Image 1 (tube, rainbow, N blue to C red):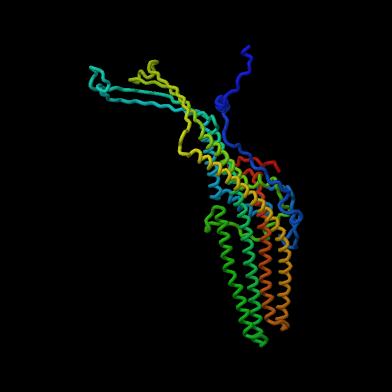
Image 2 (image 1 turned 90 degrees about the vertical axis):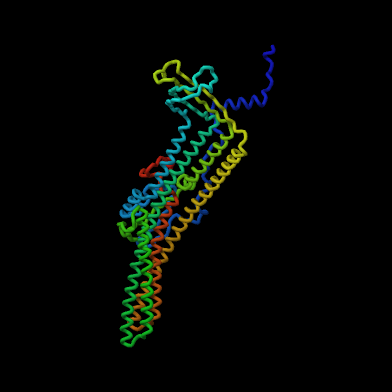
Length: 509
């Protein structure tokens, strides 16, 4: 009955050996398994009640009220909501010719190829070798009496060699995982490049339109001031005004004219920037001349659910991929501390002449298995693993900072859009009042019922109000584009992105 007795517990060494054997058979992967960070649990982008569902409306072009719609999806070509065929054509040119996008596309192809190359480590390495040699040897070296003092011999050989490193602890798999994460990073870097380029073009177009309007308004004000100068000169001749009034008006006119060269310079520079965005040289740029009246204000604006923002923002997805790569590198560094098992086999033939190379007697083969366990490397491998852990912690912190910045961008833009609408309403009222006041004072001055000081003050007030209204109109367009950019730009609804293989968000909204 001895065979029924309870066996003694296995010793720790036996348990360790069993665990090691299981790992070798199953092929475990050491190191932490990556899990995407959870989205922040927040109900909105601002404290309750601070953001209104609609903005103020003003009865001028571009002054329409905007409505914020929770969960509204973003079209892939979001810039078409501004309803400008010229803008659409310009962005199409940029997407086709931008060197920045071409560089990002090449970087993505490189990352994909590196990941594919590393996956080759899953398979055995096979190589063939053919050699032929003729050698002169000394008989004395063999120590055989009567052997010739020297002789010549030929040796022909052919062999096939196979080598395979067993991925017992998943070091190779973790390295492939890290490179795939790098490819994912490059994918979202490309998406970020598309989004940045398109948003920059919309902003630059709005800036060009604003500057063009400011130039036109300033020129109109200068013409009005020139007319007023002529009136003052006639009044001086008639004895109804002094020479000082003429000098003051001339100074005012020249001050207005002095603001035109900087505005024209900024306008030229803005067009040069647009040329760079579409991959053109400044002298070759043939883009349309934009004005604010050619743009329509999108009236239904999306407000992404906070839980979806981390899926939609390319920069957040970039840092998620970097965190994934850093986590996988911890596994690589851990596997480097453990034994490496390599199997090598060789089969071939060796003969003194090529005619005998394939005879059965010439066959040679070898089969080698080796296990290498690092014992002492001066702490190199341990510190490399600690460095990998620290890099993963850094990547996690950078990811968190990027998420915070993303939410801040959306909140800032939502506040800005509401303030823009209020500012536009105030600037419109101010411009109309200043224009009416200037017209009235000029008429009174012409009839002698108002002083020149009143005219001068009214001119300055109107000039400031006219330029302020133009800037307020432009700011609404720019901040509307900024909102689409802050929410991710709808890349998941696009099919024209070269190399786009990421469908994680399609249909998820």
